[in-house]
Structure formats: structure tokens, C-alpha cells
Length: 217
Image (tube, rainbow, N blue to C red; front, top):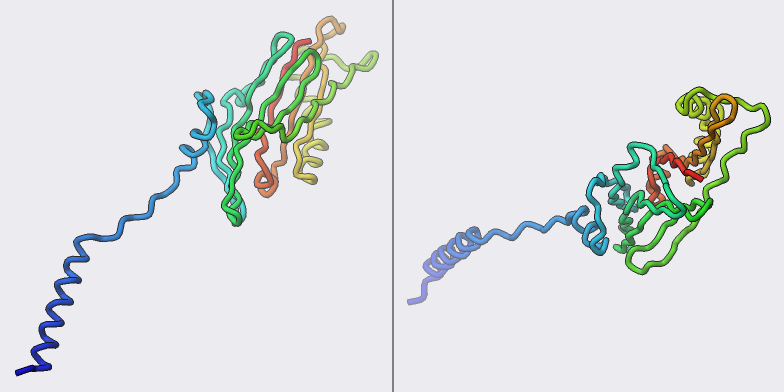
């Protein structure tokens, strides 16, 4: 004879069995992305030994970067031609779920020094900016016993204005200075790339760190 009570009891036992079986197979955890691995794999085998990895972002963008450790010191460009990579950066747009990887490098050809930004995937040259010619030393202009004294003078008189302009426009600014020893017998040319220090400016695009370039004529 059919018994509703007996049927409900059997149904409860069956549900407990299914529940117990499901608990033995918990859902797999979501796989988290590895920004450094993604950036490195997009560089087509480029050597990044000595590069420092960093990430930053906001509600719109994520930026993963590998910055050349040489930027801890002055970069020296020797010979008639030279090329130094400053940074690789992957910029991800969260709204469109798209990303681009850039290479930012400084290049010297003859007396011309340029900052190049290239799309790694396509090879497209995104931007090419020339460094300015260093300020010529005026007649009877100041001379310095050491390069450090000359650069300290530049940092006091020139850099604050350039830094303010970089922060105002959110664009890297370039400046140059010629440091001459007493008597003007030895002169050294410095080119500077000064990037914004406002955090929001760093999220606009892949900018290199501030860099000092010693360019031998």
C-alpha cells in the first residue's frame, strides 16, 4: 500500500546522499591571472634580466611594468649609435577587456637622441620624441669643479619648473644642460627625461622613470 510518509522519508535519505556526494567534489577555485607571466610571454623572448616588476591601476586601467635596473644610475650612450630599453609595460583596459604591450626605449643616432614608444605585438611606432639640445654654455657662463655641483645647480634652478609642467600636462618633459669645468676645457652634455609625479598621471599610459642620459658627442 502506498504511504506518503514512507515516500517522504526515502526522498529525504536520497537528498542527503546526493548532498554528501557533492561535498566530496567542491568547485574548483578560480584561476588567478599572473600579470608578470602575461607580460613576459608577450615580449617575444626579450631579455629582462635585471628588470624590476611593478603593478599599478585604478577602476579603469591595470598597468604591469618591467623597468630596466640601469635607471638606478645614469644611462651612458656611447659611440655613434646606441639603444637602451627603459621599460616594457602592459596596459589593460578593464572596460573593454583589451590590452597592449609597449616597449619604451631611448635611442641615439649621431647627435640626435629620441624617446621611442613601440607596440610590441605589431611593431607600430606609437610615439617618437626628440630630446632637446642641451643649453649652450653662455660666454663667461658658470663653470663647476664637479659634475655633481653642476647637476645640483640644474636641480635648483631648472628642474622645479620642468617638474611642474610635467605634473600639469601629465606628459614627460625633456631638458638639457651642459656642464663645463673651470676654463671650459672639458664639457659634458646631459639630457633629462622628467616624468609626472602625480599618481593619476602614471595611469594615463606607460611612462618611463625619470632618467638621466650622459651622451658623449
